[in-house]
Length: 345
Image (tube, rainbow, N blue to C red):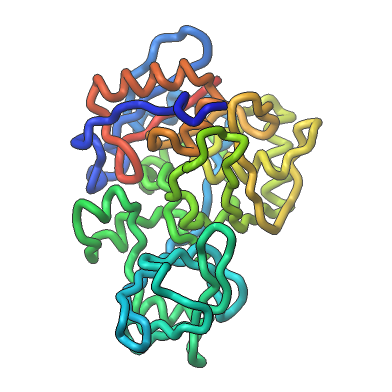
């Protein structure tokens, strides 16, 4: 399909630069299948919009301070690095700003005495960086890194201490993401209590969101786009719980596209979800047959993005373009720190 089919015009003032407070005060647009009217609700309405026996699935990945600023060791060029995906204990794949000034073997000096060498360049333009020293890379990042806010926020304001709290979900447990699973940013202990009281189940999995999630789709046709790979893990216990819930008539509601992508990567033709640990590069476009999930809670996505293609696959392209036009007319806030939608095909 032509990528232009997933384009739309978004007023820049609707891009949220800070989340609402409290987090569960965000608005939520409910989009159902068919010709059902759109419903302007709030995130706090979620317990009444779902049914007892349904299960919400969350991503427990934790965002690390993966944005680094520094120079080549000879001082000849300023270099920015956004870590993307762990390779091993001392190596990370990273996208570099000013990458044309970096050669294999170059030593890069970041803040706090942190340094790394460029070891390999990949087809997508990223580099493998080897971090020098004996301290764990996580310790080095705490000293030298900042939160990797999306470009559409970072280009409009600086990253500050508040972002270390704002850009982390209450479910964050497993270090490794360089972007937040933003659909979960809306949840608070109060909302979780209300969900539990309504008899709605909860489950967690892990998918470490990579910097590739921010990369624009440069191809003109979806068939020519190469999706980035991300590491994910789903336990036997979680798989068993989700399969049992579905067998009992409950719906599986993915909280975020990261959850949806991993579940759709591990489900078989019969709709059975299996445990998994490894990389997924699944690219979901219209025509995909969903087997693992029955609904999706997600924020509003960028035009021409792989995530706009994903929600169009779930609900239909024309339906989603109409929903986004409604959201723009009603002044919903867009992207990572913005409002939410609940998609129920």
